View 1: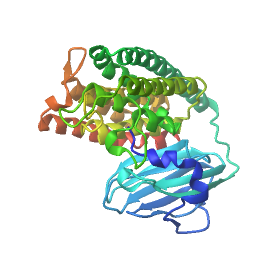
View 2 (view 1 turned 60 degrees about the horizontal axis):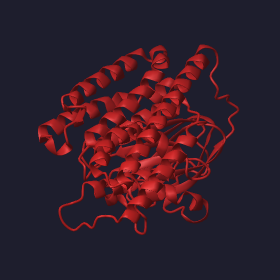
View 3 (view 1 turned 90 degrees about the horizontal axis):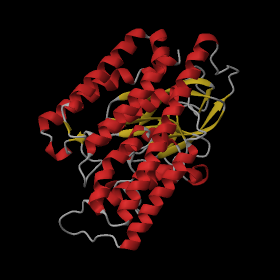
Length: 385
């Protein structure tokens, strides 16, 4: 679960009321498409408020004291054009996106909670054609087409699994619901960044209790998780009516996600950034054990995120092999190494619970994620060369 809940929910009112604390160092545009972003505890300083269409690079430095995130949002303030997460203090990371002319929003989110620090951003028409030609066009068409098919397949399985899960939970068959929980969620985790890109579904389906904003209604997977694996004290089980309500909403949201992905199209920069985004999800939620607070089934989610990140990479691999073979080899090698570490914790048809891992084992997983993260962060820029 990405902790940008209120940022996305507040999207439609961005233009009118919430351009808070964002400053532009220059009123003129970034002529070469490269901008610097300084994320402090209270500000999101973007070096220009516009850039020409084509490849745009945001070099984001976190000068605050908390981990931050940076987003480029579409004109509706909901859809995510590009994002980078898990930017620790004093770290600089690049967001590389290929952007057509139009109106957008930039946003930093210090602490990865709250409304974020947002501002309008314009992409002017450079006259450059964004479509590839020749061999590159064929490779891109194949890569994006394969990825679209993958997302459809995963949402098919997610919907089918959720229907069975919801049926068991509503019927009070908690043992069956608990057995279906992690194996069904893995389909969600494989396409998590796609689901997040729609803006409204992620907060409704995957919000964690610890990340709720004041006044936010808690719905989705983790509310049911807590009811299935309740804390020993201080918890009142949901009534049958409450179970039906939260289960019905989850199924409704899943059907909406399924419907939207039937016609969704993808770009190579979106796939590259999405692959890295899934690995960031591992780093910020799964390897820390924060995602599945009650069930401790974090390693299923971990595997799902890695699966999705790898599929996006594999679809981009022919392009990367042509443009940066050394990077292609590095990423592939580190995916293999990460999977080898994760496989140590398989148990039956699934994985150990997070609570069964030692500190040494958690560090080994974290180190493998970090080793992959660095080369994977360069994939988008490489495929857009």
